[in-house]
View 1 (spheres, helix red, strand yellow):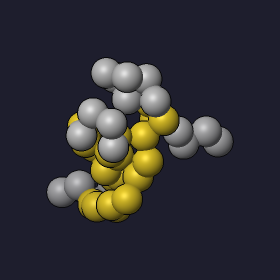
View 2 (view 1 turned 30 degrees about the vertical axis):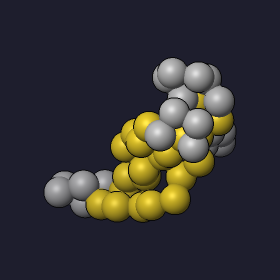
View 3 (view 1 turned 90 degrees about the horizontal axis):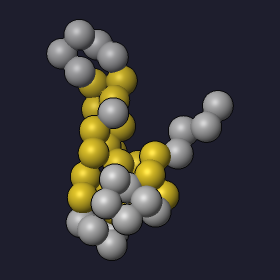
View 4 (view 1 turned 45 degrees about the vertical axis):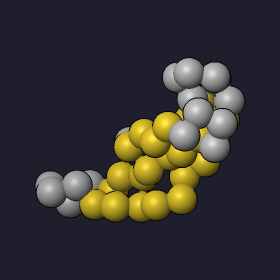
Length: 42
């Protein structure tokens, strides 16, 4: 399973550093890109 996420701005691989839970109990991940200072949640 490929868990990699690419930055929508620079297309570099983002890394996940935070796990969180949605209100309905699903596990989510926060991805961040050092170059663009963007964070995405998935």
